Image (cartoon, rainbow, N blue to C red; front, side, top):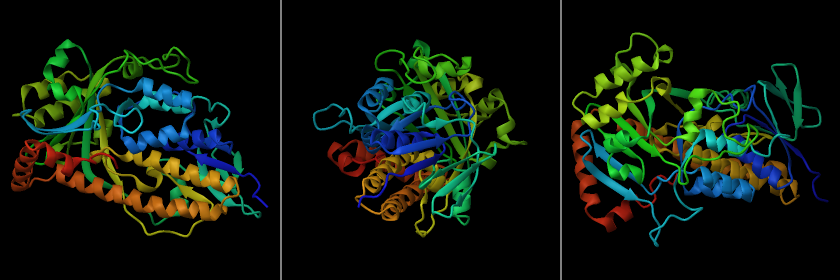
Length: 439
């Protein structure tokens, strides 16, 4: 006899949790999301996200067709490659992401999307699924084996499966896997963004309009630079916040979805900044000045880009990472995304791994709901695969972070020479970097 339909409770309304909810709802599975933010607009902040082919396929699998089309409508022009430059904007390497026909595949390709726009798309149609103002406190197993989630306001929700999608500081993880650690890597990024007018466009190498780039500089310093241009002019957003794309948005955040912009993120070991107080409490102007002081001797155009950043957009980003853990006993409580495998942003794959989790877990839970496999077996199959690729991504991202902030001058010189050589031999470049950023 087929299993009776079950209910999935998701804690956290970020990218992974909402993608999972969309996929389950699309398949007819009873699902509810509980998010601590009080309103849909509370989390409207941040920068662009790189969506790689695997992440794009996960979105295509989980979203209804109209929402995948809405996602595509918010995608920026760049995404055709990835570059490496030195601090004087001399090209070291540029890796194209185009397919054999010279054009990106509409699904299986790299994309650049606003974090705000993506969340708006993921929320669309989930008005009856997402419950805001619900701060998760703890869960317990009921006598019938179901899971009861308790919230700070005294309410609770019961489901046959509880999914922790509540980010790097996950309370679900703390209860399920109290030994699983997330540590500060000692690296601090400072990021800012600049409205993309003609003056700013003139500062940037032409290939930055094809795809983002990393700046490899001496003394353990580095910078990520990216352009976000909409393919069809300013994106018309969809979702519960209003069809005009502006309702309820704070003025400073409207910039993120209605204008083209360039963003930069400077990285260094925290002690190199010389801050006398916690950067989290500093204003944007002071953070921007710190980056300017550390980039003396860099190309004036890079420094101008930093100088032109709106101070309200300049933000400190401490880089943290999960510590890989061994496979645990499967229960009807599981984790996705940063809640289990938080990683450094140096490979740009964190969001994509979360989307991969969502699609994989969705596939397994739908199979369980349809009686095609036992529930615990479905969750176990998901966890076995997720732990493997998730912590592989954690380790690779940590390695990239350590390399990016290394002060080994010899290693940097060798890497630059190797990049220049590879850049000059296209067949070699395709072999060495063909899958870069796929995650």
